[in-house]
Length: 521
Image 1 (spheres, rainbow, N blue to C red):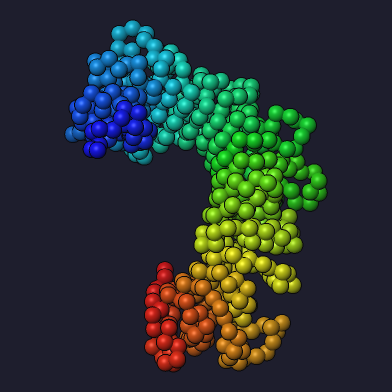
Image 2: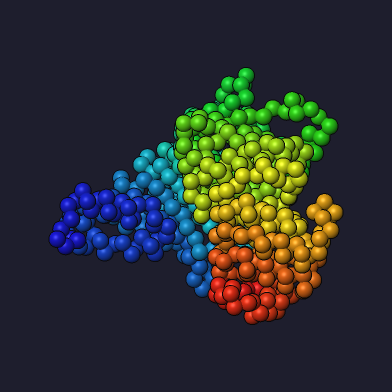
């Protein structure tokens, strides 16, 4: 059977997968037009997909902006009723004034013509700092909104995201449709005029500003499948998702993807707000997410908690960057099915509780089912007396940013038998009194006498106070002990020392000859 003999049903599925929403530009759309000329079956199967999006493309040629579109062709071929979405693209930044004007010309060239079948509008413009932020008149915006009465999905990506006039126009567009919206993505700091709940919203992707309190509407948490918020201030109130004001539990019963990126100073400012105040004075909302699959938290303060039923093993990806207490607040998740795991601890914080920290990290890393994708980065390190309680056996990627004494580093490696990559930013060779007054040579000799079963393949080592002789011994110890090592990365000032160490390795450690030594910057 040749491909032209596929049944119409099979062809329809193929075209839906191949074409579908993957056409992002007019040029890409034109590449699929030959499908219509193969035969009648192909034409009937491909036509609904090719005509599903009307495209308006702005192109600069000889300093002149040209407007190209497929809408006129679709209409002339009798496919107007097939257009379900409007995609506006550009090779450069164009103003909202031009976007609205050209859209009105194409959609309503003579009279007020409505397009009830169009449910999606997408505007995608690249960055260009030299363009002005001209905006359309209220009458022009109203004309466009009137011609598109049934918009449910809005996607706006425009470089004038902080311009007051642009924010005003985009906010007007969003508010006009908000009670019928199911998906909204915009990098514009839009605001909502009313506080009535939006019951049908399933996906929200918004850039927040400093006045976040004026930007979010009340929405039904139960309907959301995707929640992505960026530039979240430390004062963010999660009450926008709370329908029952008497409870601190917010039911995200259908949420599958959670992506929250806070302002860079959110952790520090959040801790400052609660200095000298009792923890019981805080209102900590608990996000109950039984269907959660993906979590990405960045610069996260401990302003909410996450939980799932013990029987719901749905979480496959957990990427965390934030304070210790914020990580502790994620301890209610079920990590039994997690295959991608990354934890980056940022500094100390006001509510840090080391016992809870060890408890939750032990649970996270012991539950992760695919060790090769788990990783942890520590900007802050304090093992103390609790070090013996650390049980991160399945952890495979670790980055240690603060200073760590070499002997303690080796103890840590012994406790992490599944490590594949290890980056240590500052190996300390000064032997403190609580370790003992052994010389470095004797200390390394003791380490060499203890067999090490390690899987480390990539090792990055640096030291702020180590001498060439001291680091030579460190490199020698690592090359001898870590038989699985394939790549050793060192700073440029130590590259000669590392190469010399490798060249002088005794013959009985022939495995070290295959180690590649690189410089990192």
